[in-house]
Length: 393
Image (cartoon, rainbow, N blue to C red; front, side, top):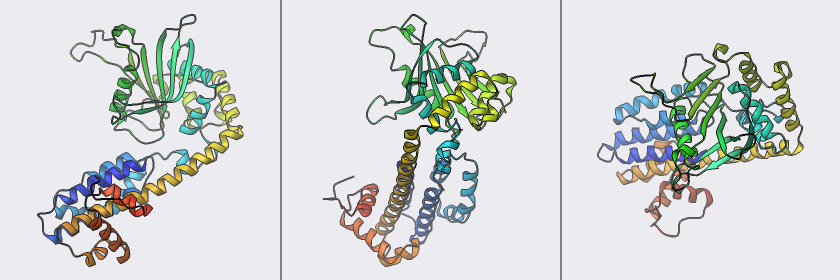
């Protein structure tokens, strides 16, 4: 997570460095704005990170706009925060009180070797409205990109369905409960997931008909498309003539827990309600009762409880480290720009509202290792293990 904020800081710092031809007073205003913007992003980490980062990176190109945006930045930040849906882990809900839509609890149930496959089979049978055959489950399957520097994905529940007597894969399901508000990215995210999943199936020389059907299923506590539906099913079609059949076997389904149930009926409505609010009063059918018994079994596991506490502590530590690293990256980029445009080192701390000691320390390291990247110098400042030469970056 903290790497995303660091990249945002790098983008902002690059923008500041392009202002070299402007007056020093204008540059000071711009740098001051970018420093405050980035620190605001770091203070509001969580499920809304994509929206906040996007808002911060679309900075104005003129310094006068930067000055006016600086005065409005503090009031704009809360709106991004209020639009998000914080995860249970971020609220630090006790493990026993987690809802099934929570990424951690869902993963724990799916990863249980004894109950995971049956849990997925029942869940999918209700959501799809049809019985499933034999299923095989991989919890949080990692799929790397086409190359080492390409974007990989992590699938919450990767399910393969075969026939009763056949080992041939008929259908593949990717189930993604997602409590983080990532509405704008959902269409292309699902497209990217489809591409990476499909690319794993065909060997060299094998025909395309060997591709299994693929269902990418999102379960969301927010309306992904704003039409109050409980289910949005997306398939490929011919734009000019919808009667033309175009069955590529790929289906994307977006379930909204609070949507109008007329799209899919009471069984799905009740299951989604249970996933969002996992409590006894929402157990209203035989299928949900079976799922509830599995959930209770996992919640009673001492190992799962300990792992939850450990994961929360680790995530907390990573966020703290990421905030501090991102803050230093932003300061390094801004101070580097100021120095390159002739700003006196003694005036920097006052401009950026940091201590004289911190300003001297950062400026000193920039001068000592001029070839170091913002990230390398930030990490060196945090670890006190400085680059051995100035060629890095």
